[in-house]
Image 1 (cartoon, rainbow over the protein chains, first blue to last red):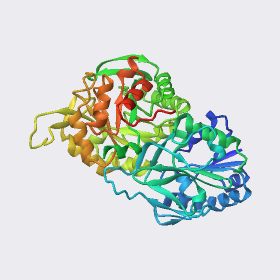
Image 2: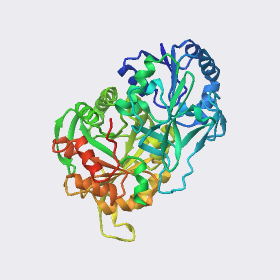
Image 3: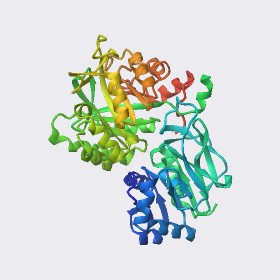
Image 4: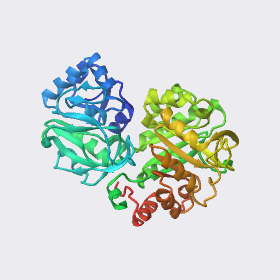
Length: 205
Length: 266
């Protein structure tokens, strides 16, 4: 069973619906035991890193997610879920899960005509191939809504970048973890194809 | 330096669907609305043709029939995987949450926010600014001390003047936490003579949040005009699509040929 982690961050139902649409059997849960026993894991997220991280800790989900990562089973982070896997977020100055070395920073764009949050459809340039990206191509557009962005410490963990006044990491991954800054559940058929591939993925790159 | 911006965000084409008691309607200056079909089927058709986003306005008059809209939202969310917002009848955070739970990405407030501006703040706090869209219905008026921009906010579907200056209200809405603005010209709405370019540009230049132009679209040139000269981040279209004169993919192809960055691969 695929578990969508419930940490009071955003509209979990839209991710659940998207899973059902592409034929993945999924369930929403806030129970650490469900997380540890899952076959695959998605942590979606809209909202702030500080409240997300605090809720994860309160519910004991932080240790459960770390434990799940150790098993090597496939996991997918979306939007805020791609940020909390790093070591630290400047949003609320929170220590995060530390599954991928790096930090989360706020956009500070020189071009003041560019609006923050970065809302809308933008291109993702692929850095290298990944099993989840079989049915999408470099330059395809996805739907973004965010004010903070990920900065993995190693370029080895960067799978895609996007240009918004500066280049930032919009897809990252390490071992059995893959994560997108964009909302793949709101990015039309291209986004759904990444989710569908995740449903088939064995966690190996 | 215009070419530098080509590497940036795509301009969004947003289809607006007015829904009355679960059926699609299109207003002409907000009177004589008539039913022209199933909003869910339309939404899906436009989605499959490359639409970027949807807006639903629930124009159901009686509040006891409002739950019909929740069913529409649920059905759309099961079939359409792009962002969509829903407006009409949202008076508090509980109303907003019902729509988000049903599957809307964002909520859209209008008259109720004018009558009680704290609504914007409450919604932004509860569901995040990025999910709160403020729609403003606007009429052109003579410039006066009370209305220095020459544009006045009107409510209740354009029937009631408020004495509020449109530019001042846009800025106040942003300060209260709105994440996006829909600038809807009542003068232009339904005329098919083009968006109100001056109004759109005035507000887009004044605020730091995305501006969605609304009202008056009749041909592709109008979209081009408002997305360039009008400085809008997105263009709302309705009857151009609903009556089958144009398609989403056709409009986007044409805009692309004119040098506007739009999402073409979907």
